[in-house]
View 1 (cartoon, rainbow, N blue to C red):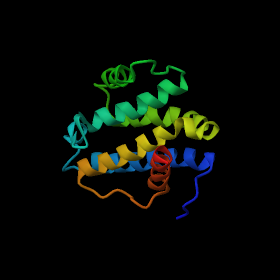
View 2 (cartoon, rainbow, N blue to C red; view 1 turned 180 degrees about the vertical axis):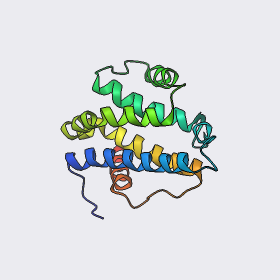
View 3 (tube, helix red, strand yellow; view 1 turned 90 degrees about the horizontal axis):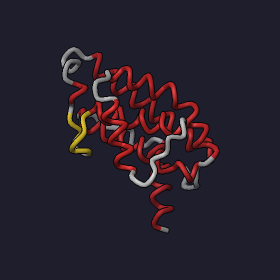
View 4 (cartoon, rainbow, N blue to C red; view 1 turned 60 degrees about the vertical axis):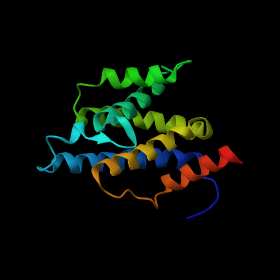
Length: 158
C-alpha cells in the first residue's frame, strides 16, 4: 500500500467500496436465520447509544441530505439526530437501498471536493468497523479505506 495521498477519485471510490462492504456484511447477517430477527436492534459498542439500524440511518441520511444540499448548519448533532429519528421504523434493506440510490451522486461530490468531504470517508470506514465489531467479525483493516483514514488523520495533526 502506498504512503502517498489518494487521488480525488480514489477517495470517492473508497467511500463507495466501504458502502458496498457494509451492505455485504449487513445482508449476510440478515440472511443468517440465527441472527435475522434480532440484527436490526444489535447495539453498536463503539457508538453506545446506537443500534445497527441507527448507524445505517445515519449513513443513508448524511448521504441523502448532502446530495440534496440539506447541510447541517450550526447544530450538526441535531441534523444527525433528525436523520436517525426519521428512519427509525425502516428496515435495514430499505436504508441500504436509500444509501445506494444517493451514493453515486455523493461520490461525485467527494471526487470534486475530496478534502472537504474526506471526513465522511473516515466516517463511513469507521462505521464499517463499528458494525463489524458489533457483529463479532473482523473488518478489512488492509482496505484502501483504512489507508485513506490514516491519511486524513495524519493531515489533521501535521
